Length: 142
Image 1 (cartoon, helix red, strand yellow):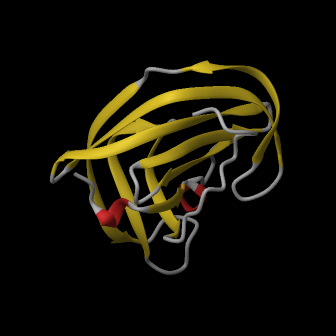
Image 2 (cartoon, helix red, strand yellow):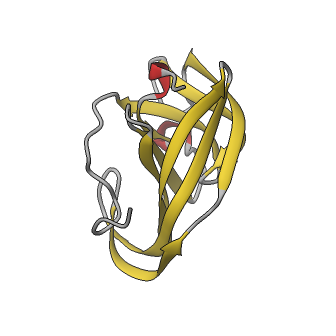
């Protein structure tokens, strides 16, 4: 089971006041997606599947991850891979989707609040509902 309100590319940017990194979470309607975290020293990306075991929980299961260096952009693209491989990390956490005004925003935004952190973040603002096959990871690792 999946909740269509979770579909989209979510971004911590509006919540990154004073933070040294930014994170993204992309949840596609077909139950696939990716997450990424970047800072000046590099970052990581993971490919994942997701579902909603209950009405207020999301389960994210990673199957591949990589770390390395990024090219600038929103979200950035992983251009130099230092380490990559299978990943069996799973996160099952409660969530809410609300209208919220983040510290770096002037207007309310649709926000995904997670009880447990994904990519070191609990709060992600909706960047877009239009998600495609674009992925910050180089190549297909699925």
